[in-house]
Length: 452
Ligand SMILES: *Cc1c(COP(=O)(O)O)cnc(C)c1O
Picture (cartoon, rainbow, N blue to C red):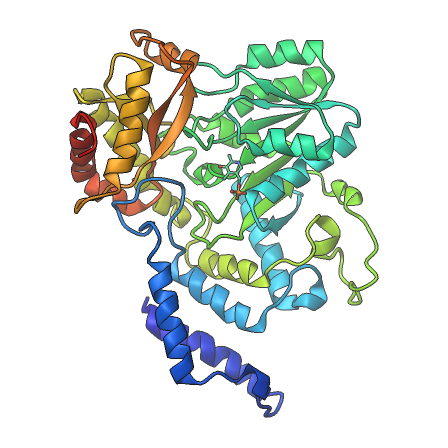
């Protein structure tokens, strides 16, 4: 699609509708001349160059990529009206779009009845899930894996709930025996399982944890902020589909359309399998809710104002690339394949070592050094040197502790409590076409003894 043309349509569509209300002129206080704007905009354009090229195959650092053009056009068009999805009177059109995209995400996870809404982030979605967990199991603690996102420990603190980090196995997945020990010892109301950890993309055994729900009466929350859209590829024979299928039997799930869903930042989602949890959000608003509606989005969320444009962007994107195997699934597939291909190249490399087999599209590796101190220094060097020079490559670092490294690579000398290793997120489907070059470049950087 031609972005220039459709950005023009974003302007026209709104102006056509606005014209139906009769002419009016913007207030003179808003007036800005084109010459004046040109100067500010040129400055602005220059300022924006202080960035990393998230859009380019050279960038394989964090889980970030620019939104799909459909999301950009959807966002900008709706943003010109600036609907607020807090309540229906904030914009009925985008409130309905939000319900529709939530239903589509629920279907992706196999959830039948559900209650859900978009959030500004995975963090907010997880906060709401843990808040409901606290309300359904008052006085009980919350367990999450040691490799889960830092938000869970933090939000437990915010909520005044005792948080428990459960050890992980040598693949970075929650150790369910350790979890069961904890469940016998402590009063735990909720277990958070991660479907795709932020660090390595490890997938907790959600399906095996389902038994604990029956045995210990715990609530299960799945943090699929990063990995959720991989549910579309479960059943392709590419990875174990059972954790993804088990999400349907859990109590809540979070997924971030602003990661794999091609959306700009400001788009997370939380879904609860029991619509009755709405009661924990119920409150009166003296300012809003004057239109009749089953439940306003603001009545089932902790946030008040939220961009209706975020719902619009996701709705328009999903119209074109639905949450199906053939839609968004085909966007995710090349990254998964590239991660596996790269894992093979790393395994064969004399200069780089694969940290662990990637389950999804995150690849973790480190310069082949005998001891942790050497790995740490060399990783830091590759990270820094990679970003400079005429042939840059942007990766990210992951700090792992000595037991985690030696569990995977018993020959390493643990001369430090932890070490930074390297990590790459192959979230862009284009990456696969550039693997050879990226790998070669990283090998070259890893063999350099010190910064020039
Ligand atoms: C990204 C991420 C989060 C946090 O989500 P934000 O949208 O960055 O707030 C939480 N959990 C996991 C597993 C994530 O990958």
